Every structure is written in structure tokens, then in C-alpha cells.
Length: 157
Image (cartoon, rainbow, N blue to C red; front, side):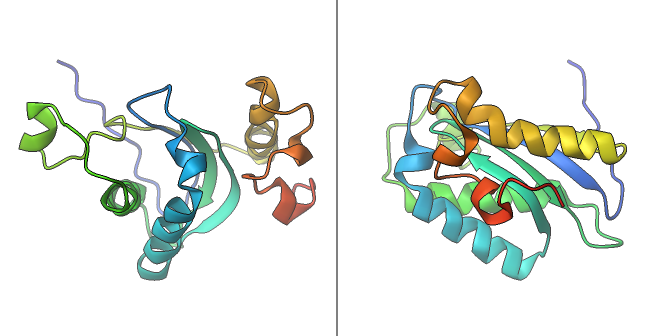
């Protein structure tokens, strides 16, 4: 089995895709308040900037910038996932989830991409904003309520 080693660049800007284990679930938008609480509490303990974020029913995309000298995005994701999971009702779990003390809500891994330059940054912000349109949830990015598009007015900083 291969062992994937994630880049560890202090102060990096990183794009993430994080998904639920059940891709037919709508838990992320149905329980968006619990997700926001989990992110807020984690940022209070381990700060990071949110450059862009979109939450869809079963997955989310976001772009973070870590503080100077800090490279630990994995722990942040672990904490966010755990906090969200604890806020959800207990469901039947597989033995592998029980052994790892997981709720079985999330896919175990997440996808990350370190941003290379300004064009890459802008492309990933736009990707966050257009994703609800791509999936057919809305016709325009501004119509999706769970997006940083509203915070930023559709303008890339």
C-alpha cells in the first residue's frame, strides 16, 4: 500500500475538497449550523484565513491560508470533522469506524492542492463559487446560500 505524504509548507494557501462518506446525504447543508460552529471553534484555537468556501449537501470545497510558520492543516480538518460528527445523531457504524473511534460520517481522507500562483488562486476561488452551478443546484453562484461568494460579493481579493 502506498503512503501519501502531504506537502508541509508553512503559511501556505491550500485548496481542499472534503466529502461525506455517504455521497447521497444532505447533512452538510441540513446541519450547516453545526458545521459553522465546528469551523468557528477550530479557528479560535488554531487560526487560519478562509479565502473561499462553498458547502454542498455532501461535500465542500475551500481555500485556506495558514498563519506564517504554521503548516498543520491536517489537525485542523481532524478537529472540524470530529466536532461536526459529535453534533450529529449516533448512527450504526462499521467495526472499522468503531476501532478508529470514528462516527463514519466523513470520508477518511481529503483532497488538497497547494496554490502555486495568483492565477491558480483565482481559478480555485472561482471553482468554489461555480461548484453549486456545476452540480445543478442553482443557475448562478449568487443563488447558492452556502458560499463565500456572498461575503466577497463575487470579487476575488
